[in-house]
Image (cartoon, rainbow, N blue to C red; front, side, top):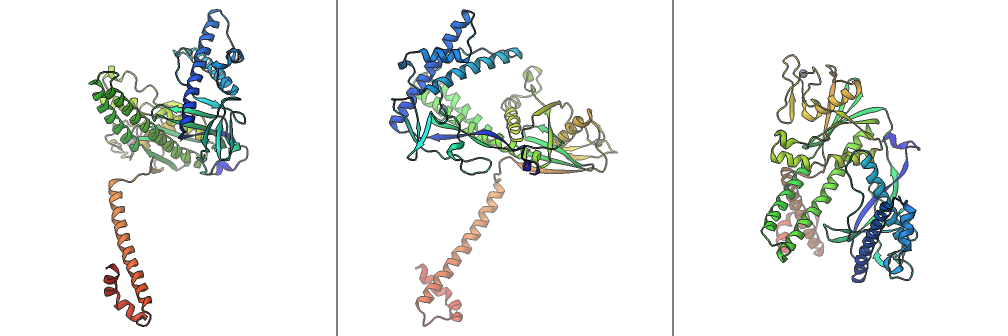
Amino acid sequence: MVAKSGSDSEKTRYRTAIIPVTLSGASYRLAHDSCHSAALLWNQGVDWVHAQWKAERSPGKYDIQGFLNSLPLQDRPLHAHTTEIIAHDLHEVITTSRTNNKNGMKVRSPWRKKNYRPLSFSKGYGWRISDNQLHLSLGRGRPRIDLAVPEVCDSATANPVPYDKWGEIQLCWDQDHRRFSLHIPYQTVRESSHGNAITAIDEGIINSMALATWVDDKTVDVTIVNGREARAIKRQRNRAVGQLQHKISKCRPGSKRYRRLVTARKKVNGKTKLSLRDFDHQVSRKAANHVINHNTGRLIVGDVRGIEKETKAKGRIGRHGRQQLSQWSRGAQERYLNEKTNLGIEHLNESYSSQTCPACKTRNRPSGRHYRCKNPVCGFTCHRDAVGAINILQKAIEGVYVPIGPDVTIRVTYLRAVERWSLDQRKAHHKVQCRKARALSSAQMWALSEITQMSKPKLANSSTSTNSLVPDQSVAVA
Ligand SMILES: [Zn+2]
């Protein structure tokens, strides 16, 4: 937390809060129609750009905006700023596809016809708050979309964010949840780590991230973030989706049952998507805490990109392993970690990092989660993922795997990404709660008996009250 105190390290940035909203009947229809009109505008913009390209002209973002504004008024029943944002979005997508193409990715520029597009409302013009209501404007002379003012909390401080910190609001249709939600960006302080320590990260499916940093010459700190929670969520989702898919395959496409099943599948996917997003944030939060607490200046990640490629052809991994690999949200976790620490991430070849012994450089194949060096002279033991992270750290500093000294202490901290209780913990908690409840009820009995004692003041004194507790209790209960 030392790194946060510097004044120039405090940069403002935007976070986006996603808030599901309930719209009244009229507003709901209005929002639906407007999202559809926004999509039609987009489609016209795409067609126009394609025509321009055929005529060997390359329109800029103000050209697209000019074209959309030249359309008749009934074609654009939206706020002028909303139309403007559609034009600018389209231009941005085209630019992105061009840069991606230059970098060797095969991407098409926008071409698909859309049915629905999110509505953007610019700050100060598109949206306004009055009488405890949020008004989203569709342009002068048209009805507005009115909503109850949503509550936006800063996820870093948990304080409510005042309206003047809100940016451009988007009203989006959440396809999976089948409801509208508001995306509200707000200004917040960007925490960042400023130091010169190097932290190495080993990513895995079972343990999402293992982080290693040298504290001093004799100590390495390792934090291991457990990813069991995500596996459970994914497994549950895969099973549910698989069952639904099986049922869907037996229906006639378009039938009532078919549509009902497809909606059910979307709902399952929508729910899991949210909990997985939350999980990735939890993992990266824990990793970011390690990074900031150790004053890290460089983040090195063992490069596992492309590990999922050609695994079937090479026959190394089974069906279930391949599914686990393809559903591994490593990229999202890296991105979130980058956002939370503001450091940038470097990748480093990590081959044999989890097999090489950090003490003597012998290669061992660890079985299970524990690493034990088979070199009789060495006998090094440690957690498997800690070994990977330490080796990557050594490679990042020295360029090759250099053994750590013989008297180095490895301090390992285990964290669960999501603090949820195991079955044993829950049972133990239940027992304690029962004991507490019993104690509470007897205390209430006590209190009751005291009250009955007080209602008979002539008989009551301190010595008799304890003696008469048992008969009084039965009276009170009856
Ligand atoms: Zn060894």
